[in-house]
Image 1 (cartoon, rainbow, N blue to C red):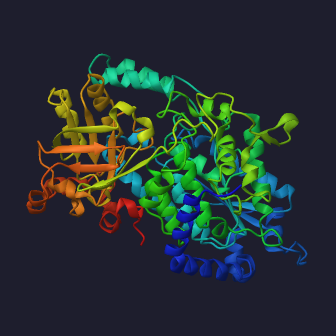
Image 2 (image 1 turned 30 degrees about the horizontal axis):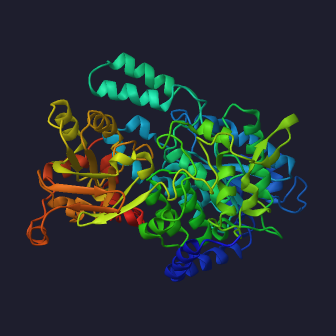
Image 3 (image 1 turned 30 degrees about the vertical axis):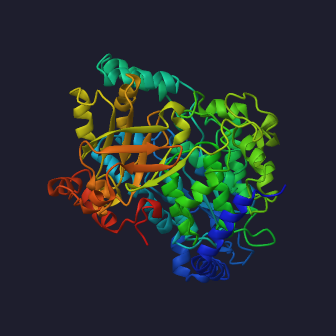
Length: 613
């Protein structure tokens, strides 16, 4: 299949732009790969410490020394980095995965150890609270924790156990610092379907209007989020899994198998078998070589084709940079113009991810994109069959894994072929103008609201907007500008709590939009939202110039975000300063004091909000 010329052009410019940093990265990977394994290089005391707690049989394999001091071939040792906690429904199943992995490794003559744990927070718990201001930076904390875990340097391969929003990007950024290790990612899958996402949203909107109380709202939320597994809407967590499939970093078809299904346990065991097959030898495939420019482009295409989370226009910029690859929103925009939207999964439609999986899932989407010349097929993956292996769906009749082609769409209201997509362009759109650069999840917004022009109402926090809504001050056409929400101001929290009141206003027939330098996640909903405005107001961005009553135009068709003020007036208008009391409050309580250095060093959203560069 001939590759689409835009795919070729975008990939070529990324390769050229990234040449110095990518070469430096690969030199580091190759230098680490050329060394003897750590268990052979380290001093005897170091090795003894590393394996002191191992069962005796594992210890002799890992150290290559048996009880009678006979040196034997040393067995490969897998390092497991685990994001388990039982607060997150998506990560609760990971509690017992290390035991499965260790058992499978022993069967193959290898060993495995839990190298470390990483923190995993839930944005669903922290939405609208000060804890949410730790969320974005938790990605970099997870990356650092992954590096600490692997820094013991006694591992021949690694398995990354994690699922949700910042956890997977953080694990991936950390793993790429150990790019000489073969690495496979191991998810847990989504929870089974509960109360539909559309019904849940209706109750939220009713609660925002005071039509139902806390008991009714809590009952609805509990029916939606009811068991182990990821949330069932296509937000950041589930977008993570789609992207990892497209990058070839999973066991094929692992993303959306429910935790309770028998095949899930077999897929976890298969992850151990897969990573051991990549250890030094003829099939040696380190993650630093798998994640190249073409691999990153494949992830970008998969995100656009499925209308995935806007958070990944930040996270995957950071992931790419961790591998020495430099991408920006212009690359996403160029691809979005030619990548068709192949799925309708909430909030882009009514289906949840279980229905997406039943209709064909990632395997169907990847096959359609490959056949349309919109993905690079000639990439390395963790499997010998390359990316084509990721077009198949797993099952385990009689306890043995088998894969079959995704076949035709089982529900063309959920997934469609590339020849008859839901739309000819991708689900995300770049907006730019005198208010800066921004993104919008256009696939979630009804066509009637793709262009909004209305007077601005400026807010310094999401709480101010909520108060104005409750007071009835927003019952009109309005563009709500919520500033001081960027990485340097307060850690760039998600503002998902603003979706219900904004949706209520839209439902009343008003023309409304949100413009912010904060985030809205993969669940941004049906209200047009220009998010991640960059540069942020706290760094002197143009949102700091907007005043109440300014007319603002958000045009999701033309891709523009403008305040309708004359150039002369706009140039002369002073920048508002972030209120000193607000900046001070953003740094106190809920552990935010410990994140001051990350706020100071954070790059722009378009640069991945990285804190380590």
